[in-house]
Image 1 (cartoon, rainbow, N blue to C red):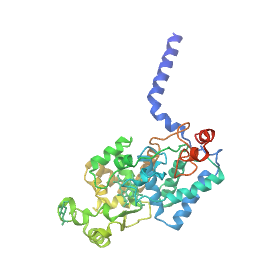
Image 2: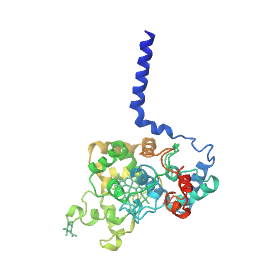
Image 3: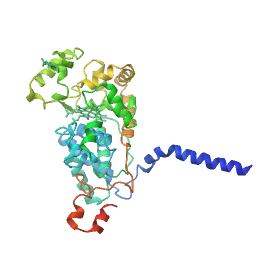
Image 4: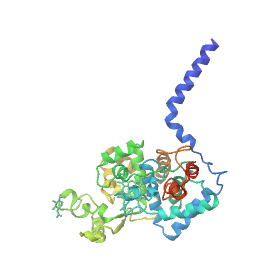
Length: 345
Ligand code: HEM
Ligand SMILES: *[C@@H]1O[C@H](CO)[C@@H](O)[C@H](O)[C@H]1NC(C)=O
């Protein structure tokens, strides 16, 4: 009798472990990962982000986007930070657009001084994005750490997997689903566009030739249209001029982005599209009405984003320089196999 029930327990336990195994990766991360390894890690990262924002408030948005682009391609592995010529930096969504690399480099150099070879670049970027939101007036959430850096980056994967402002909502949703994120994540994470800027070419067709009609997007709020046409005149040399994604409070992390969508004043076509699907529109309306709902849900979805395809020891490496893998050049420089092996730890 007793025998049978312990067998049962055995099978139930194994069944549960098997079933839960895809989620176990998250349990390898922890809030106090660096508590012994590098006690000042969190303080150093937050201080670096703080000073960067004092110097240039627009950098907060750039750091947040950089983290999104890291996690969405190859998982959160700092692939976006690699300088490889065929890497993600050169992909369309990043080239002449993604910024904030110097901030991460600077924080990394301080960390190398405090605790050499200890803190991964992707953990720095994850924590920097959260700090950027916090310091911009958005929600604070604790970040689990212990990610390791990947060895390579793919321009091709970045081009295919990052969302484009010109593609239909259903395609954007599919890209998020592919990463294990759901419809709510799409809507609430789009709320990141409450801070930051976009270049004119990312929304220009809406101003002058919407869907090849030769006319502006008829749904775009008319006073916003007039303003945008002034910032982005209908000629190629205005393509790289900048407009705020949320012109009301462009450096404040709040829910104005959703209020703008409700009044047809979203900047990107892909932003405004959230109002054209009943399922997403109802969420946009809820977030426009409740800042605390948005803050809570945003923190929750950022936590999900920060767990995509994470590498934990013994996978990956702790890069010495966020711009290149330890494997690159090191073996060649020293001609020493033992040295190469050392870098793989
Ligand atoms: C849903 C699909 C998304 C699309 C189509 C999209 C597209 C874009 C585009 C076109 C820009 C302007 C880039 C430029 O002009 O160079 C931009 C900026 C930005 N995006 Fe997104 N994005 C999406 C989702 C997200 C998510 C999930 C986040 C973060 C959680 C995010 C954060 C940002 C931020 C903060 C900026 C401003 C960057 C800066 O000022 O440097 N975006 N996005
Ligand atoms: C608008 O776009 C369409 C298709 O992309 C193009 O054929 C047309 O010439 C454009 N019209 C203007 C006024 O630029």
